[in-house]
Image 1 (cartoon, rainbow, N blue to C red):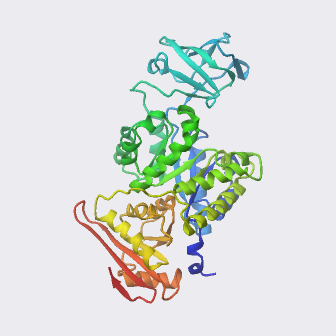
Image 2 (image 1 turned 90 degrees about the vertical axis):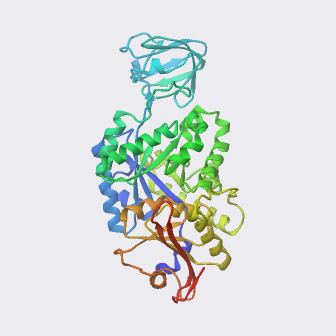
Image 3 (image 1 turned 60 degrees about the horizontal axis):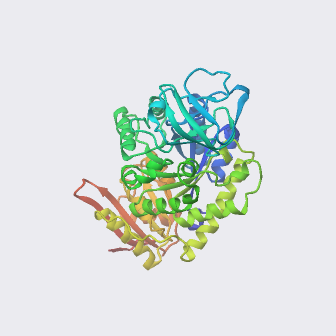
Length: 485
């Protein structure tokens, strides 16, 4: 069937899948691509670099075989704090008891909990709070030494070896972008990753440090994804959005370091702020967690996915569900069907969260809003963008136009990066001279994506300099007749 009859009904919300043991074979990766995976996430907190780079090759191979572009995201470990090996593998901590997190070698003392970070005691504060096991255990710090963090337990529970440690308030100086991250990212640049996700971001300076590292390597230009997990990141969210390319609402650690009842409000607020600035946003963590072991999701999970789409997220992410779960392909199928239904409701009504304000700082911003409003007024079938300045894409997408956004570029890298943006589809220009005029571009659309006589809003050009943008906006029909706006 010709793609012209299917473009408008394709899913607009993008799906990010974490690859892992359950999705590491060529056959499974190929099936995930055909089922709807838009971006493959590689979690460098687990596995080895060589294992991840093999998966990149498998994703690229599956993309070539299926003819479906798939982006690759490298997710850096960051300064993830973890408990060390416990004697017997677990420890029961009771409310009111005194325990110490220690950097000293393991001992038989059951009140001593080994930790993997040797410098941690100098970065914590007396009267600060420590959470263990994803927030299930709560400790209060009453003293520190060079090697120990002495605490009193306020909420007890069973602690397992190598479980995570969350400390909402760390002293400044604790590095977000670690030496291990730098080694991994240097290798990721060599393998052409499209996105790099920075874990435990606290300030815009963390993003700027990663950007400076990438520019210094000169091996690639992945988009930077700021993972919003820490309380400090929530406090500095406006500056982080200004500094980054993409934002991830990482609800797992966010729900530990912030009051859990605030997570829904934080999600909505962060998504709204990102949309107003034209910054793509990914919603992540426990979206279909029950499907790690079950073939069907819960009603609450389906509602959660739909509500994230109604909030205005560009993409939804699967973590354990596709990395270690029993039903990775079924998870993508569920995401796809829920997204299609949510989008149908959005585009037919007023379900989408309102865009109360949008950044208008130059001609490109004005043009993106004009393209949206013109497409709405004339009932355009496609908004076509031919530009090497791909930053205009999320600016158009933030309005959630009914017309699909079709991005034409000679750059395969830029086409892959656009896979994370809501409502954007890709069209390869074989060489720089392709579609030399708007009429030629629309003629190609008439051959492939729209019917003769249908309307197309066309944006062409790009920013020649910061002060002299060279964009143009046209309205054409698929027969090639042009009306300049």
